[in-house]
Image (tube, rainbow, N blue to C red):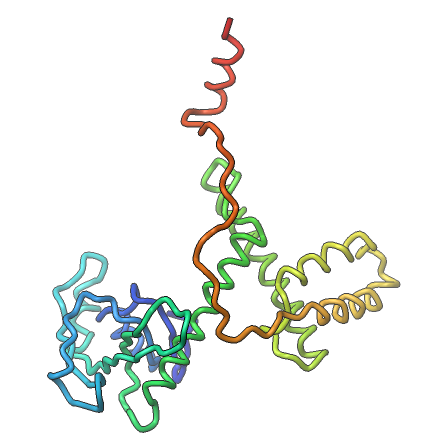
Length: 258
């Protein structure tokens, strides 16, 4: 939360739609838009009605949690005014037929239901970024053994990810396009291809970097609005025996087999 500034809006999944997160955000002057977590009963007949399936209710402060101090608990308000709303999804091919949102943006005239739904849809970029880190950068499996080395491995992946994103931003600014229009995987492949040209040559560094920016800008993501794809994998996994014991034990057993 220390990275959030007053006036910003946090888009978050249902796990963050709780009293404590929202209260701590409001203390910092940060608004919230998130998916309803399903723990609180939604009854649009109660509260201040703003429209169909749209109202403002008061959330009571729950009991003190084990992770917070008494001073922090007393500093939080006893109630929160929260806007709860339901948006019907008419787009064909979408898995969900309706969207339940909670937000601290209480002005229904300034922030309509459809605008809040479109804002929450932008949160999907976070899922795509996590996919780039885990799959494209192959961070889905950590190979180090000790906790200290695992932390270093994670930080090295994140450092490389931020450098690639910075390269994409510079290439997008140079080509006057949106950074989201450039392929992350294409950028990484281009960077690796140019690495063989020799970044250690000081006399060619500026020339080579300009060439990299131009090449990165050519890797555009196809414009596929409202694309519909089945949430299933077509290729079947290969039938293999799973290793359910340490590799050293399995190797020792193979060596001792007569």
